[in-house]
Length: 472
Ligand code: GLU
Image (cartoon, rainbow, N blue to C red; front, top):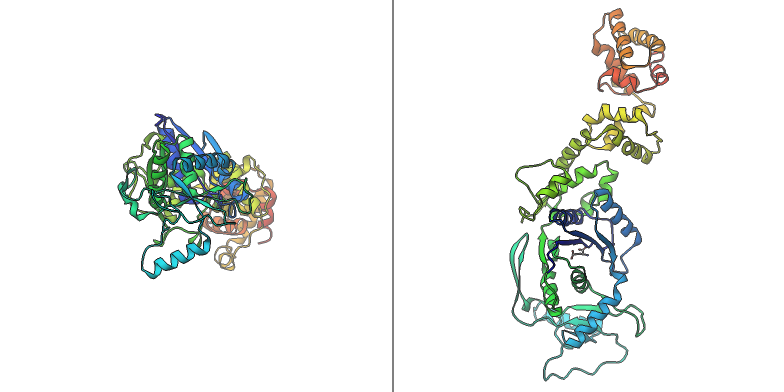
């Protein structure tokens, strides 16, 4: 085996990049980076009916958004059909694979008979060559599949990087199909490999040393190990990551909320926060909760991977995101918030004022969606509630509001000058700051609670403030 660590992520483009796959990608990436190795992106698009270009685009965009850069790829399996074909030929010649001419009807009947006998469903070996065995005559008009000659006895055993020693008996597994004929293809059409076969040829050809993937693949690994062995290929190490459970303890799924990386981008999460949160979902480094991508790479050596399922915790993710939001430069937040506004049909210029608005409100937000919610007051009319108007814009305060408005008409439009105008107004009317500030906030911002009034007002245009304070 190559001494260079080589990992890969191999998503199927039958949908967006799922959070579970994103976590596997992150671990694979971090592992390669930690050991100065290489990380490969492979697109497993052999499920032709369900694979789409749109999914490929989304997967690539999500990888980029998360900052998971790859050294090779994307490599598309459908562009490697000739290679799989060549390996199949080699296996047929070596007797480690054979053609099976069973029709779907025969396989159905086989399954029904096994079920009737209370047996596990498995291929019965009709076409498996054996010394001294006479195979049935090859039927006309049936395109054969190719099956792998799985060893009939013995165990397959490996030291899983996450789960420890796993042993599965060969008696549990049958001769799996490794290649199907091309749908509607002629005699020269290249067959399409099945997942368990293509994955082995690829991991071999791409010199993958460490395979991290979801534990739904544990049962596939014995087949894959047997195929590696049949090919005389060096075995990678395998690490199967436990599932991610939703807030409700059920497997995280679309029905239970957002499961795509894209959805989190749209919902105002930052890639650094996602990376940090996903990293902790099944791995730990002491009791560190907040760490940078660089720290993760420094620490991620394959130890301390959790054996038990991780629980998705939306509140914790929001907390992590709030931390990153607070620590992100205002100028970096501006285009992200502008993108949120664009989704709402509001064109917000990406400028210094927007950056300063972000800076003023970011401490109280968990996402850029919430930040955009707050900043909407700068871009669209506000409608104060009747309760707020009744509670804060009282007859006792209204004259002071007009005094302030008058002063603001002439004031220099800076925070100190606005602060001075507020102070003078309070003195002139004998009011306390909250009385005036609440009223002005309700009228200008549409709500009674905001950061410091002078700072908030300065980031409106004078015109906006004067209009909203008009004749109240
Ligand atoms: N295409 C497979 C999946 O998305 C890859 C599994 C593997 O990493 O081997 O589940």
